[in-house]
Image (cartoon, rainbow, N blue to C red; front, side):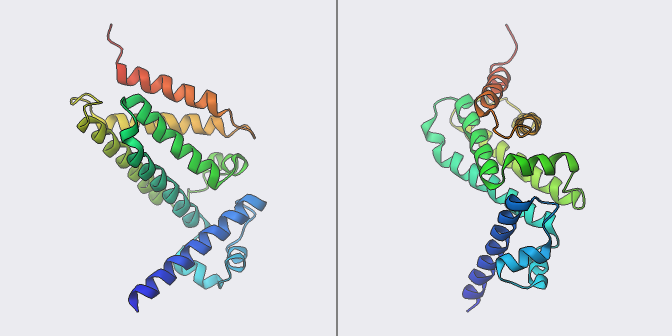
Length: 200
């Protein structure tokens, strides 16, 4: 019975997240209320608050899911790559794809400059820290395969790549039709330079 209840809770949670994303896409993040999300999900407003304390928490759950899915897919596909640059660029491309599939550029433009997660800064920091850890673990797997220097500080590289990718992402979503090819070229140039080093 407890297993059934757990599945029902997960299904209800996913229904709330799905309903929220539909409304965010249709009318924007700011214009969407928790009451509207409840109606769309077919649950009561208190039920939404039982699962998520705010709209921001729903957004964080969505972002965590997209990051987790992208990292899991990249790990499964790692054996397809015989160099670290290609593997890391593939990981970044999967994260980008998941984020843009979840929400269109117009919503990201609304969210990013306004600091929509500012009411839960500690949660946003924790989410980012988990992604950086996942990237560092991915780099360690590349080290284990001999595709990356054993002396590489993977935690530093993970933080650096994540910070740089975030800046480029903010630029990317300024256009209604993002230039994905140009974005990916910049990511590859930075990753190649970082992994090759600057020594002559």
